[in-house]
Amino acid sequence: MTGTHAHHTPATTAPRRSPVADAPKTGRAPTADPVTTAPAPEARAVVEEFLSRVGAGDPERIAALFAEQVDWMIADNPVVPWVRPRPTRADVAAHFRELAAGVEPMAPRGRPLEALVVEGDEAVVTGNLAGRVRATGKEFVSHFALRLTVERGLVVRYHLYEDGVAVAAACTPDEADRAPESGA
Image 1 (tube, helix red, strand yellow):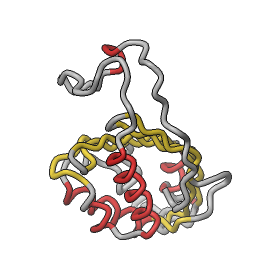
Image 2 (cartoon, one colour):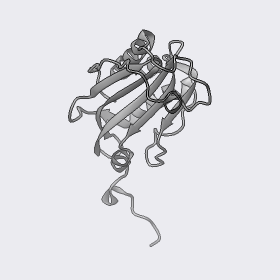
Image 3 (cartoon, helix red, strand yellow):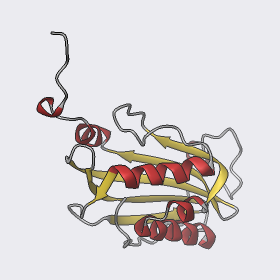
């Protein structure tokens, strides 16, 4: 996520179809009214601050918005060095440091941030991202969706959905760039 400008979409307050289907998959019962939930101003403020800090590129300040323990999910991708489990606040800071070291941000096609929808303590951000992998010089572009959950003013869930194939391709050196094998 390289952009700093968010396009805000009003959160919905329409009744939910099914409280059970919409309940978080944490094993806990929903804490909000199962019929309707209003946007939590605190959650929106935390998410907007998160987006601002990501745009500024300060890993320590980004991580300060996260709980000590985080439900972190980016699809496993062994080719991408910065993608791996990050269950703690310290791991979150390491992720954003490694991402900055590994990728030069580029202006994406389309708006960097398309929508921000907040309902209760849940937020979804959609947009576009692009970058150049420093190790290979290759570029990638991807649409993304980010699900965040905010509890007591801190991010407790970070689930990023992006084009992992495009990012992996940009991280993979071309055959001509690989060192020749010895002993053939």
